Image (cartoon, rainbow, N blue to C red):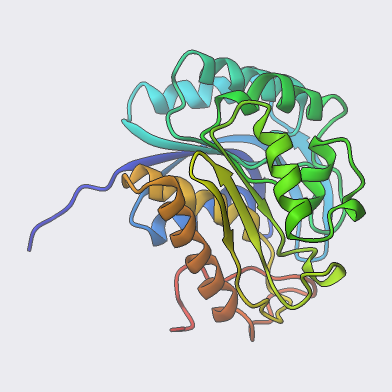
Length: 277
């Protein structure tokens, strides 16, 4: 049997004590793709399937120390950011990117939890726009995050054309691609019954449209999607192909966990195919 050495990816994100999102979801996603996962933890959250109870931010210097420890020892092929928690951390990560240390950078601009808890301190949105987004190969906001980044009300984003419009606005901040995710809020808009994502980049506009899965277990889908795309990039897939693979992975993981009852709220997805779906 030929033994294949795994490639390495880095997640710069927060810890979810409930295990559904953040660093925990990223590491399971990396494992599912056969990628070695390394981490820099930006915040410790006390959370479960119902909500976020408390957050303790990591000092930016410690975030940088974790990144440095990984980057000086591993050949990191792709990097994703999740919850960065505070503007100073966003700027610190941007300086690493400016120095060329964060290859194939996927930025998931985590601003608020799915239960409505703010996950970014004041000034963080400006820090993303002015410091970090320009170094990303891909930015992956959901509709609410896209609206915030564009200074809009999320209710103004109602259909495919609106998603393309805000994607182009975010693209102007300097990233190569933008993927606006429509899944979480699809039931409130004209795309009811679907979970459309819109990718805008050098090839133009690509619509990834799948049927919406009726499940309470969708916690961490955004984290998992961006981590899966980073895996694809680490494995030398093109960005559109990595996105397509990631969408398929997350859809299968949501379907696999649809009957699970882990916790009293919105539970995790089946990253590792335990359900056999």
